Structures are given as C-alpha cells and as structure tokens.
Image (cartoon, rainbow, N blue to C red; front, side):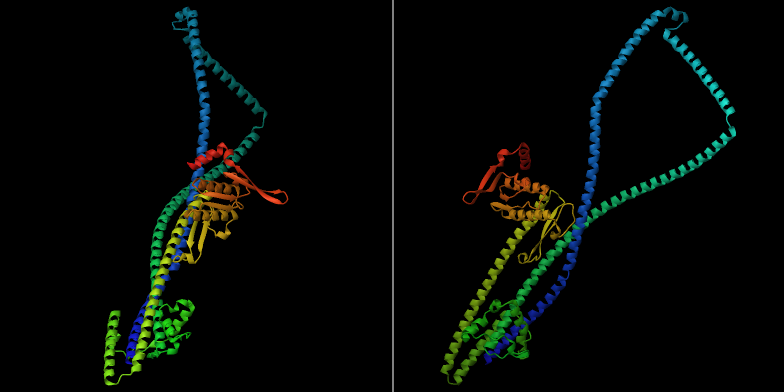
Length: 590
C-alpha cells in the first residue's frame, strides 16, 4: 500500500508538471492567436498591391501605345516626304542642266550680236564719243520710256478727272454721300464686332495654351507619381515577404506546440487509465475516477493493461472522440496537498527518477524487515513473482509499443516532408513557367497568369487557385472569361505542368474547338516550337488552320464491304511545304 501511495505521489507530481506545461502552452497559443489576427491586414495589403500593379501596368501600356502611335505617324509622314524628294531630285537636276545650257547659248549669241553692232555703228559711236551703241541705246531708251510713261500717266489722270466730273454732274451727290456715311457707320460697327470677336478668340487661345500647360504639368506629375508608386510597391513587396516568412515561422511553431500538447494529453490519459486499472485511488479536488474512460474487457486483464499502457492508444480513434475524452478528463483536478514541499519543487526528470529509486530502495528495506518480523507467506511470494513478471511483460510491451509509435511518427513526418518538398518543387516550377507560356500563347507581354495555394502550409490538402489576366482586359474571375480565353488558359496550365517532368508525347483532342483563327495560329506555332525541342504531339483536329501546320496527317474513313470497316490514310506534309513555311520554320528555329 505504501508503495502504491509513493507511486501515486510521483504520478501526481508528474501530472502537476504536465499541468504547468499545459498552462504555459495555452498562454503561447493566446499570443499566437493575436499574431494570426494580422493576417487580414496582410491580405488587404496584398490586394492593394495587386490593384496598384494593375493600374501601373495599364498606365504604362497607354503611355507606350500613344507614343508608338505618334512616332509611327511621324515616321510615315517623314518617309513619304523623303520619297517625294528622292523622286524630284533627278527632275531638278535635269532642269538646272537645261537652264545652264540655254544661258550659255544666250551668252554666246549676245556676244556675237554685240560684235556685229560694234562694227556697224563704229563711226556713229566715235562721233558721239561713246564706247559702243549699247550705251547710247540705254540712255535714249530710258529717257524715251520715262517720257512715254509720264505722258500716259497724265492722259489717264486727265481722262479720270473728266469722267469723274461728268459722273458727278449727272448723279445726286447728297444721296450718295448719305449712303457712304451709312455704309461707313455699318463698317465701323462691323469692325467693332470683329475686334470683339478677335479678342474672344485671343482669350480662347490663351485659355487653350493654359490648359495645354496644365495638361503637360499633370502628365509630368503623373509620371513622377508613377515612379513613386513603383518605389512604394517595391517597399511593400519587401515588407510583405518579411511578414509572410514571419507568419510561416509562427505557424510552424504553433504546429510544434500543438503536437507537444497533444502528446502531453495522451500521456496524462494513459497515466489516469493506468491508475484506474490498478485501482489506485487518486486524491481529487474536482471530478471522479468515473470520468476516466473505462477500459474495454475483450480478453484477459493482462491484454487490457497492455492496450491501456500504450502511448499510441488513441491513434486508432477519431480526432472528435479523442477531443471528447480530453475534455471530460480535463475536469479532473488532482489534490497535491499531501505531497511534501520538497517533492513539489522537483521539476527535472533526472531528479524525479533519482527520488523514485530512493523510494524503491526504502520499500525493499521495509519489505525485508517485515519478512524478518513475521513468518513468510509463500503464496504471497508466488503472487509477488507473478505480479513482477506481469509488470515486466507489461513494461516491455509498453516500451515496444512506444518505440513503434515513435518510429511510425518519424516515418510519417519523413514521408510528409518528402511529399511537401516534391509538391513545392513542382508547384514553384509550374508557377514560374505558366506566366511565360501564357504570354507566348496570348502573344502579348501584358497577359498574366498566376497560381496560388489555398493552404500555404500543406498545399496538397486543399485546392489551387488559377487566375489569368487576358491582354487588353482587366482582372476577372476564371468563370467570367470567354471560351477561347479559357481554352488558352487551360493549354498554358497543361504545357506548364508538362514542362516539369515531360512525357514522351501528347495526345490532344480538339483543343481548337473554341479558338478563333488568330489563337489557333498562336497555339500551332507554340506546339511546333515544342516539337522542334523534342516533344511529340498527336492532335485530333477538324480545322484546316490547325492541321495544315502538322508534319503528317492521318485520316480515318469508313469503307463498306460486308460490314462497315474503318481504314486510315496518311500524308507527309513535309514534302509539300512551301517556301514561306520553310522560311518561317527557319526563323523560329533561329
């Protein structure tokens, strides 16, 4: 009985240590729950970052498109002018040559004419004292022309005055003067209106210039804001990555603490059931021994003890059943007032084991003393040996079961780690490759495709979210995309998964059913590129735009005999390839 009491006190001390550990773990769990509340803020920051990235992407695309369009128009106009100048250059050179030739001929003829005139008017020029006849002609002609011009001007002026005098005599001068005065007033009023309109047009021009200056200033501000936004995005991404790493560490710590707490609960459950099995009355402050789960008596008592002493006893139960058992046993509170103060202060496991050995030695001494005082009971010794053997067998089986459970746990954690590493390697490769493939299939650098696990800690237990941003469109859920966009997105995912561990060949059944001609050509070019790199594809298609890009065609047709039989035809298209197709293949290969 004393031995049982000492063992009970030792178990109570162990339970007290477990209780303190439980309280400490609960406090740590509360702190971790506070940290978990920051996850919505991180999600909000993530969504804001995605929105800012989308806005920045579309702003850059609009800016680049406007610049490219303007430059294209200017380049086209400059090219047209250069072509016209190149066409006019030979004509201009010919005209200049003709003009020079004619000028030379005119100069030659004029020199000949001057020589003849000098010979004819030689005596006349000598008498007048001039060098040649041309000087005389220039003086006389200029004088005669001036006289004729003045006479003509005088005659014209005289005729005008005469006609005006006759006209004034015939018409009513006062009425005409009044008409001119009215017209003058109307002209002045019209001039004033035109001046006002001119002022308004000048003001409008000034306002337009001011608006243009503001627009230029807004553009510069927007450009500076976009640069600042890019800097802020980089900082936010850096902070977000740090927070994600911190959350991952905390989540790992929480999982470790939860596993340790579960182990402590299982050990407490085993100790309580062991006490109930051995009919050890525990001093309780709250609850009763009936709250401990009753062992199932399916075989002998030894087999019951073996099953109840195992540490992995609750592994076969569901988590809901284990939680109910722990909740019921948590109401049991042990009373440690009967323990010595020194025993209550033991915390280290080595000190507890040492004290256990001391009590065992004291027990043996007392038993020896009792044996010397009273006559030995032979049946008691036999019973004691039987109990010791049973205890030893139970202890051995307990140790075997504990080692087996530990090994199973280690194997499970190893397999779980391998599973996580393999899934993570495949997921990261596919995540990096899918965006590149989707851009290639969409033929646009603005297209985006990204994957995201719903459960970052164990992604293989939950789903994977897949989203795409089609070129020239905003972000929309996958269900809202068109049939062709969904097909292109599905092909990008299929090719990205295939790129991780490529299979010998593909079999694709009518993947072009929902695609237009443009997307069919893009998908066909991508598949041709993959086949050049070593991938083999067998594709079922009914569209000419697709199967004309193949190396070989295989057709299935029915033939009627005694019954309908399916037969095949094959055609090697590489023999019928055009020069354009060969050039395209060479360019793609380069």
